[in-house]
Image (cartoon, rainbow, N blue to C red; front, side, top):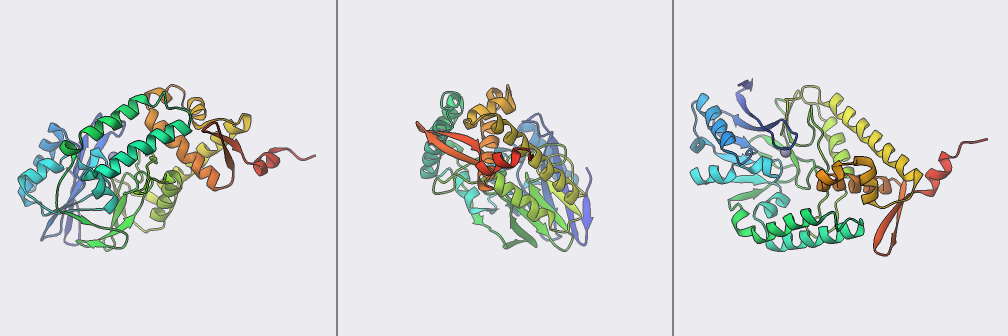
Length: 336
Ligand SMILES: [Zn+2]
């Protein structure tokens, strides 16, 4: 294991190889500032991950009971997996964004609203039938709220707050609760799933607390730009390798997002259509195998293009039909 050390502070990365999704590794980090041990994220709920976490601690002469606090970059299962096991050893405070806290505590009102939100969304996008497996999963979650909830001493943190010398920077898009943690002195940035080196990261559609759809691709682009403006020596991501040249990597990601948006515009130029029809054309068989992610991407991009007045939508018989905006069509006509 490679230890990263600077001015009285050490980071012990826990880089756990996994076949989960296509993320390659699950990364979480122990920070030792000489007084306290802070854990950033908590891996995946997997025996091997738990053993590896204990091994990395033992190599430094520590055990789970020595951890003083946990900070979460977001609430996804591959970042909070070991929380229950850790809390069973020792009840320590968990710092997280308020949106993450209501999700980890499995707030019943919120999850019922969210189930309704996706039912309506998939109906409007003309894919209610194809969405049945996803909706069944969401409905199963509703029956398991009690066993799934993680009760803990949560401490809400938001933009500008500090925990142990780490500044909270809100970076939503991948999820509405995504934050990055900035050690200004050492120019280290812990980014969760904002930007990954050898993998893409998705902007995932979700409602806010009031059931309003968040513009995830718009948020993701703003968060990437915000992160690129910070001078950083090392970016510690939630998966894959530690990143040294984050500005260059983020520019590449933004450019590839631009190309994706252009390809979608080109498909809409051929024919006005629903989001699900666009998803089938763009993603082919992935539409069935990764339905939820694929629809998230398409809807996120359509919201982004609509916000930039490149796309308009019209509701016909309860279903949104997306078209190229008039001005784009006119510009596309060659002059002379
Ligand atoms: Zn992740």
